[in-house]
Image 1: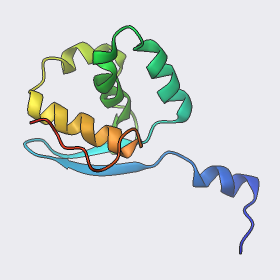
Image 2: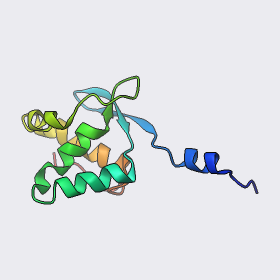
Image 3: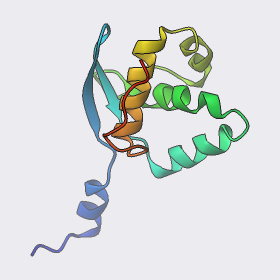
Image 4: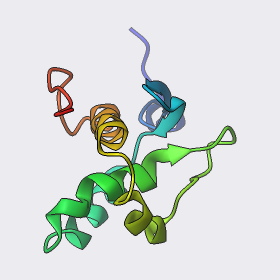
Length: 108
């Protein structure tokens, strides 16, 4: 059994990027959020729980360089997105981030 040093241990828990295919959209890169990011987001949405899924999408979707494509100011624009595709993306983001298990289905 190999004993990890501190750097290897921390690297093993670094957020990873996963590609998912969203019907009608194509491949989307989703970055796992850090524990701090999730905790901060939950605090921000305590009074506006309906926006949590869209805030997760805005924080998790990244470009080919691994940089956020959207910012918090884009959450309102996401509210105007097609429901079925956005629901599928939000569900994928929650799965990638371990916020739900893989057994839930999109409501659409």
